[in-house]
Length: 181
Image (spheres, rainbow, N blue to C red):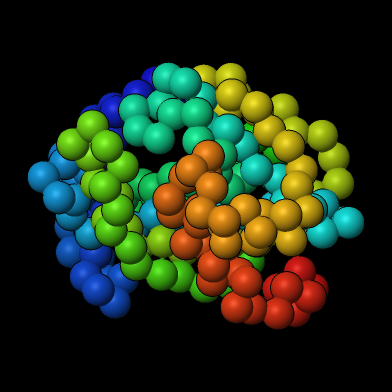
């Protein structure tokens, strides 16, 4: 079931993102976290606002936090970009062209004896329609001017998921016009 700590497998990777094997998703997030592959999707509208979601209250970690458009883990054997499209459709109810713009590694304690230790591939896209989010995944959503998000991160707002703050710091160091081309 979406949002629950199911027994799906994640792809374990080395510090360069090369696959090493698999592990149950929940286990990979326990005991200090094992480095595994992840995807984060950022979808902008034609006005340059970013679609963010409040994680549903039933999520097994970081419930109620505002985060990027969607995020997840590729399945073993699944192409990374295919995973980004799959999760965008599953979580937000739409798809759009995506392209990977950067990757990064992080380790963060997310509470409840859970640790995110991920090699995260970040994708961006543009969409002008209306999302139809899965309520098991998404509590609510909104389109936000990116400068407002940068301001909130500088102010260290606690309402955002920790990985999303890291992504925003990286985005703030990049040429957004170039990214959104």
